[in-house]
View (cartoon, rainbow, N blue to C red):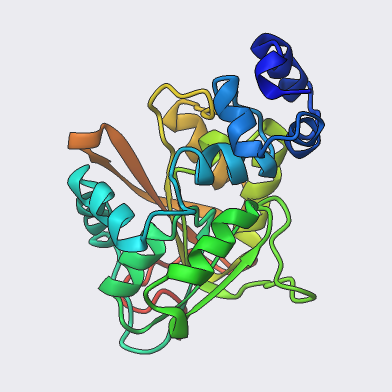
Amino acid sequence: MNLTDANPDDLIARIQSGESIETIAAEYGADPVRLLDYCGNPFVYSSEWYDYGYHLLKCKTDTASFEEIRLQYEEKGYFKKLDFYFDQIQLPNRPVRWLEIGCHLGLSAYAAARRFPQIQIDMFDFSQKAVEWCQRTFPFPERARIWRCSCDHIHFGDDPLNDQYQVVTCLDVTEHLPKEVYINAVREICRVLSPYGILLLQQGNIPSPSHINVMNEKSLIEHFSSVNLKWLDTKPFVPKSVILHKFQKTPAGRPFEYKPTSLRKE
């Protein structure tokens, strides 16, 4: 059976019902990217969609270089936003462990590593294609550890990564998460932060089929504040109409104390 003989609406219904994109594509002897392109790339929350519908079909990571994609985002002002965000923290002049939640194309991690030479950066994504892309192209491989993982169960192999990171960035991630994944991700982010560690949090708020969990900023603050994270500050980045929230993990049983130059109790 040829793909062009299929009804695109029928394919969309099957994909959005949860059928495997790869299985449907194999039924028609087609590549998953071609299948999604043929039926208009309908969004479904799955690692398959982020593999084929986002990273390969939309971002062209099978053919584009890191520099080409970096320049595209540079022109959009993406790195100006990140520089503004990173202005909100001070790091000690010693090794710092940093975790990037949902690394996607590795651009936020790249900007952090470029800005802070003392950081060792871990990053993960639940899309295997994203992980392969970052492993293949990330400009600071000697300072990075990159693996596949989901933000509702953060671990590296057998290591649960409890209290491991002085900085965690979660930028343009929460709006993509179904409710149960989001709730568990909030808990997991707090768990892997070290005492007095800093979280930089920003949700994307532009209309998009993949933005299935956009909420008001007050609710976002309340959710993260409920898990032993102290809200410190909120900064709008006006040109892009997005908002950065800064939190710090408060060790249980100890009074809250913000130490911006050390990020942890000495």
